Image 1 (cartoon, one colour):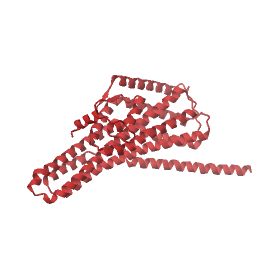
Image 2: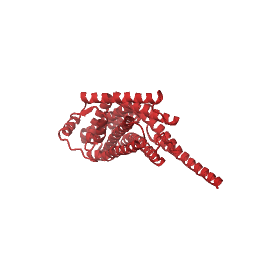
Image 3: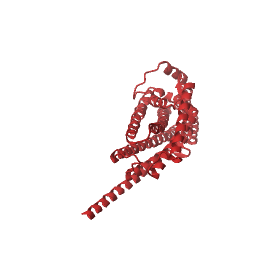
Image 4: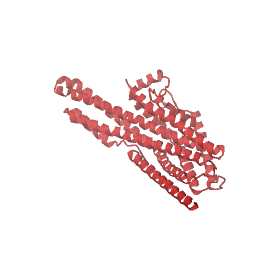
Length: 407
């Protein structure tokens, strides 16, 4: 069936959304889109499998973003200029400035790139029509669990934050809104990467099936019926796969362009927040909140784990997606080694050149997101843990010395 006909069928026969049982792109992204609509950062509606921007939703997004930017500037003014929001130490000032500045930057970039992000989602929806229902079900197990349970984790974290800090209600709402915006945009990026990875995997599966056809038909290569029927059939499938790969590669480049600034800000914020959280945990900093150290340590531990899991998911999704894209070139060369037909060889060589020219890596302004990012995260966490262990050992030794001297 043509893509337009598939889109028409899925529009007319719309199944009810079910958790962990997605049937298409809309039901797969339903939790993420719902949370984004609640936050006012999803000014689109899906009409006949087409993303459209409505005046009401766009006005609401503009209003929410304007209020958010104005109040964040007021908050930074109160912290850094007039000092009505006062903290007890310079590290807390630095951590709050890092959080508000980078969070505000992500919110502004999210609003500015509403148009390119709509075109990106439209392209991903169109190329995902080729995925099988089984692929959607497998994706929904990961994506729905990640979006829903991750949101519950953020809600639990902010609930503890609300119960421990003494800031005003508007300040708490601002922190909550920034946290959710950053989280939902990261989850949207991971979802898009996972869908593109599934599309690359679908191309690999089709190439493997095509290789079986080439190998099974090779003994009959010189028969006239082969050249009249089978050869055009294989060439047509190869050209279709080459076109499909080109569309997915173009979408990967569009994804990198759309999310580059947001990802850079997210990575910088994550590593900065991890460093500050560990520092506060070590010195038991109460940041003028007069709370129990145990409750504060629980809050820092949950925040630390949340950031580690989120950045690890980004690195894992990008690295596995790059592996699937690389595997396409391997499968093309395997088919090239198994055939002796000149027309198929020429088409496979063109396909191979296309794979080499389209480097399908997920990056953010030159920063490649793959296993290297995970290695850096593990290295930083290991360093943090060693510092923490050394601090605890030193603290115990000092306490023993004080006890012995008193005795």
